[in-house]
Length: 384
Image 1 (cartoon, rainbow, N blue to C red):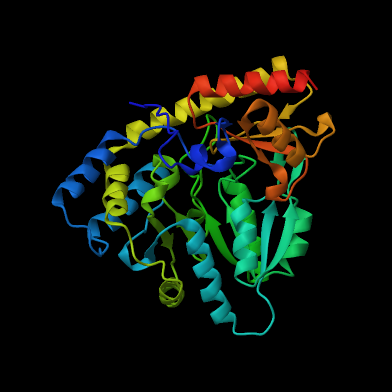
Image 2 (spheres, rainbow, N blue to C red):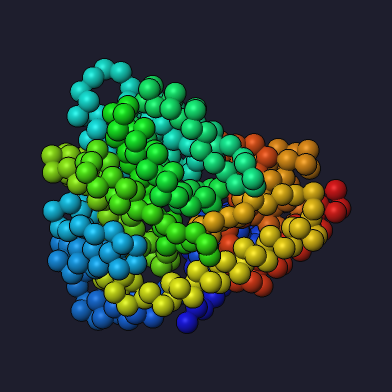
């Protein structure tokens, strides 16, 4: 059963950061629901053991990942030999960059193509690893963001890597199989290595289906997929993520890069939580998806009825609303700063994702919190 928790005062980044003081925080991509009971029970059993030393990854974790993705998403072929464990998806991406740089073995910067707006940590990974960003802006058609195929085909000639977010944060697009196949064709033709961040894969709305990138590139090995139960089951602080790498040589090179970055040691609680999430918590996740979708519908209907000067695009997945505020004549950064100061509501401004005129709203909270935040948003806009 889904249970909302007041996280204020629990040293929570989302609620207890200095900027979140006295605010309703619908910003950081973190949920306000207690983890599923099977996860908590598994952690309690591990706690009762009483010793929390260095851990290995047992076979049951590999089996849980393989079983989950095969039965829920039709992705077959995951096994111990093509899976790597690390602390989180962002460190995984950095380690993959490192391994690919060693493979390229050249003086120039490695060039990374990604779609903008983009998850802000993509920018940080690219810069911190000494790579060059090659952005391709998504285009708005029929009230949803789509790939600019002409631009991608041209930019791909300049790049070494395609960094994909599937489903896409922050726009909420769930890429179709046809879109992913077309991207795979471009990557193959231009010799791009594809890194697919699929951490939001469990959040899809009615009428939309997550397609693992691995299922559209069956005969290729120039790609990897980063996943984690952390986002879907609200266990990000337990630090447990996986990288699917079909190429054996690159598997070893990425593993070496994980060792270089010292992100190959895992929390024992993260390991038991992962198994309990994938093996015993599917019904909890289904309930969560329904709740998040209902929250999105409430947000959409509220904007249409009460704030028609704003524009919300039809979100297909994730638990993030992407709202166009450009008609207000303010930058998103200034809007979010003033809203937080005067009305005590926190949203993310689009500048951090490489775009202008949007706010990102976290929908993974209680309906009561969402309603209050939107009422404050309405009062702020009407009082300007």
